[in-house]
Picture 1: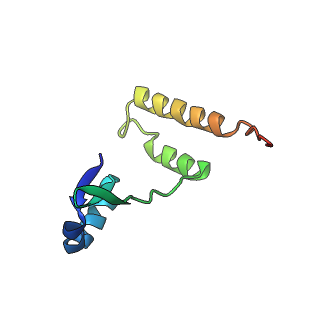
Picture 2: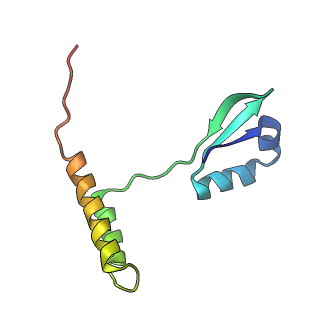
Picture 3: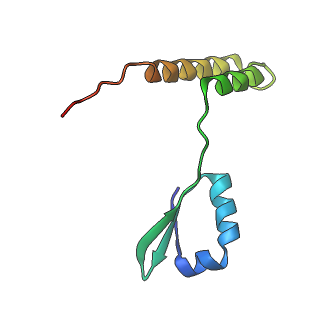
Length: 93
């Protein structure tokens, strides 16, 4: 969810604002005179397939997720893997 706050308010509460953005992964729109002038966005690190495989091992447990949830998660991983392993068409203009 994007939230809008004034530049003045952001300046007064910058530490809290950055903490909020980093934990909620929500963007903050900075407003001046009622107009958007900047945006603070979270940096979300990319995951490699190796990192995802390690995470999967943590979740591959009935105590953490049901069989249905684990299978859905595995399907999502496979779909993502298939999506990113397709050749990228290049257009030469």
